[in-house]
Image (cartoon, rainbow over all chains, first blue to last red; front, side):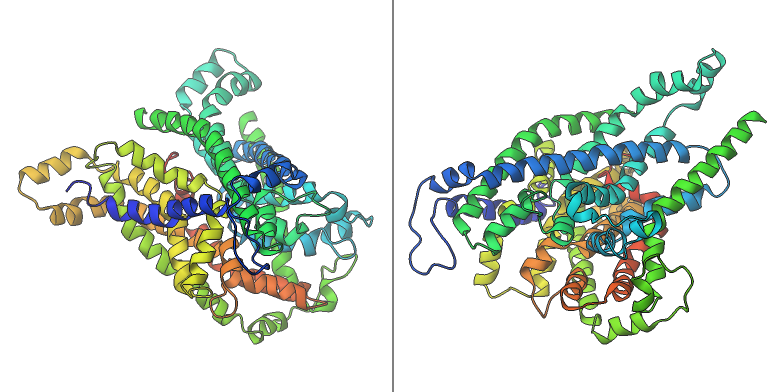
Length: 282
Length: 271
């Protein structure tokens, strides 16, 4: 009886997320190209061999790591700077805060298109318009272009989490440190940063969960190019599925992604449960 | 005195940072009021006769059905999420079932799994059932996308209900319905609103599932934006007008609820 309220949500989640995954496992053992009529022979682990020996998947994996880590690291740093600025009293603080969270609220695909066409464009983009030159930002620096757009959207998220962390610092303790003669830099490195550690971890972790799935920005800014320079795992699987119609291989790649995710998640969950314990004990 | 001066200097720095950071959005809105000829210029044109022509064009190209599809998919999935997540969160917080933390972590792992990994069977099933290009398919998938987030958020809000009050109510013979209505709801309703808002935002902005599962009838507003690009030559001002329209609901919702945003996005970990 006690379980009754939990069951609908649990069953729903299992049906919509776990059952398809089991089916993916099955599909990954078939040689199945949707463009090729006829039967779909069972090929054991051939698709896994194909996918793992294909250099595209390895480069997609590397790109995923670079794009995710780049976006997370830079948005955490910039978010920390903004949070520190907002943690002081000044005229119009509420307005500045609203301005700083606004990029997060723009529809991601709209943000990606805005950066590509209105800012990065070599002939009429705002960046070249303001600073001169005729750099084609997207084709010269594809990874940096994607990361810039992602950082612009995700910095507000990091800022909000870190600002909450800063505001939970005890003012008496900070004041006491000041009276004892600690300077601003000492207070920041010896007290604020250790206090913020769990908030930094939380922001980085949640940011990674979302950013590892980045699809919109790649789809609209670079289409994975030039070459495979910005093809991450989600985009590579999308191409295998809807451009090459290699359903078997796409499934195998999907399973590999899930295994990798489980490895990362086991580590991440430990961090999360630690964080939530801290929060609950406070 | 010195501290005050210091604060105002940093205040100026904060203002400058804020304006630079939000500038792409300001530029988007400015461009949306330009003629195409003024939009794609180098150097950028700062002074121009504002026009609503681009907004007119966007509506002429029939953005309305896309907006309605987005509205339907977001609103119905949000309602469904709240209906599923709230009782589940109750069973994971106020009346914890055995092994409640396993269930809680099960929900979060479904969020960690990249959508593409299990997408093919979903696609094949939807196709097999003849449910491609159907808003209700999107409603179901958005519900599953937001469910973990909502369970975690609602749990964090429910934990704020003081146990003593609940127990006192039970001693006085209050039924479950009464204690939900009189004790729990008043305390968690702001949290419920925040949960619903965040689920709405994620559903409204979703792109990957929409682009792969919809074609003409059920396309949501992100798809409208993409469709635009490929077919036009000079499109920048119109693109900005369309981008402004589709972003507006979330912008307004986010500005209004910015105090609740952080707790929701961190799934209740940060208060």
